[in-house]
Amino acid sequence: MANITFITTDGTSTTVSGNSGSVMELARDHSIEGILGNCGGVCSCATCHVHVAPEDVRKTGEASEIERDMLELDDNADEYSRLCCQIVVSDAIDGVVLRVAE
Amino acid sequence: MAESPEEHVCLIVGASHAGVGCAFELRRQGWTGGIVLIDRDPQLPYHRPPLSKTYLTSEEGSYHNPLRAVDNYEREGIELRLGVSVASIDRDRSLIVLDNGEELAYDKLVLATGARPLIPPFPGLESARHVFSLRTAADVAGIRAALSEDHGKRVVVIGGGYIGLETAASLRKLGAEVTVLEREERVLARVTTPGMSAFFEQLHADHGVKILTGKTVSGFQTNATHTIVRCADGDELVADVIVIGVGIRVNVELAQRAGLEVSNGICVNGSARTSDENIYAIGDCTYHHNPRYDRFVRLESVQNAVDQGKVAAAALVGKVAIYDAIPWFWSDQYDVKLQIVGLSEGHDRAVVRKEVGEAPKFSIWYFAGDTLLAVDAVNNAKAYVIGTKFIQSGALIDRDKLADPTVPLRPANLVR
Image 1 (cartoon, chains in turn brown, red):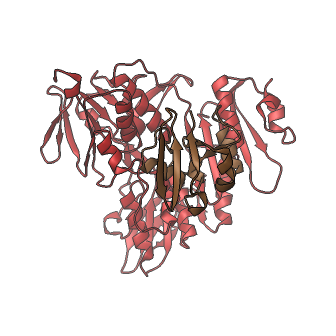
Image 2 (tube, one colour):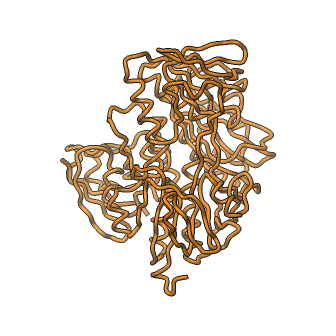
Image 3 (cartoon, helix red, strand yellow):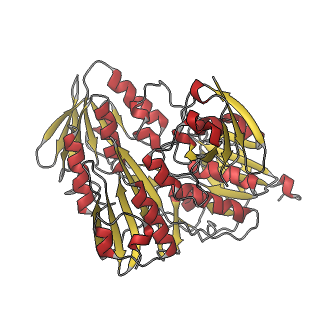
């Protein structure tokens, strides 16, 4: 079981818990504003962009090559950016804080 | 007609990517009245692209990839009417009639009716067993159930388009013996260039899928254990399961019978409005003008469904909105990801760029004169992203550098 905190662009902080699937699916199921996941979670649309809190990057790991490339579609991407359909929900990411991209 | 906006009702016919996206966007844009989503599919609206890609091979029993969680609909006050069909639209009385005779009044109506698989009237079709198309969760559940039966895993896929090829790849992963029959001389003939077709034919051959081109199916003959698929040239194939993916028919009939303007789809203007000012249409079913390519198109894609739904939502609350998106598409087969941005039709030159390395990683850039129209990128998201930005900006591209894999793929290296 992992608790994950999303901070949406209006500053609202929401903590939800899950134990399987992707972070995008978890966000979608809890109606986190700004996480769309239009492609269904296959790293094709870049509509589930989050910034991982710097201290949590060691938990989430870093973006893959295709993910980094896709993130370049978004001018707001930075070194902490991830497409959260590519982050698997597991105990390993318990406690991470994700800021939903603009 | 209702007196106050709170009493206005927007009915949306079709609850897939376009209809669902439009409903939520409508609320976000400030629509205070009722929103009712209607679909004949009884399942909570779900992502369709994974049906032919990941779901066929997933180990989960039922398909769970909803577009939105069920409580999202409740929270946003979006009423779902699933498992019901719309029989007709009565524009004079501003209402729709359901199959069961029930009438639902609307102030605004959105048609997101999509398309249905084309099933040609092959002789012997009605007595053939285990024949499927692939557009709904029920189709895929049926294919999975048929393959799990203990009677053989010989699959004939009729049609070598994206659906056919994605299905072939997924079924191959499941251990099926797969043959694809394509009527044209190459797969993906309608949607891509010969070079890309050749790549996918080789990819499937490498994975043990037999692709036969130039094959017209002339009929089926079914016996106690299997079906024979006959081709016009006399070839015969034994099939335990048949998947038909030869294209779609646009669901225009509701609009047509209501007297709305219909051509290669339901005709809409730049705001997704039909020829009736209270009726909009979005997604696969629309025939619309694309300003960037300056021509009328009908697009079958998630991008078009989502983006046109947003435009319609804005227009429905009285905002000025014009649909001007660059189309994009993707296809996943085996470990190959194809990403397409733009529309390549009308190109007069194609530049092929092969990246250095062993794994297939290349891109095809389509130009009309100096204008970049489209990019097909295979395992190359960078090319897809840079292509998208170039099409957006209209940058002039140095084609010699583009074709040279020793020049790193970066925008600054490629613009003239």
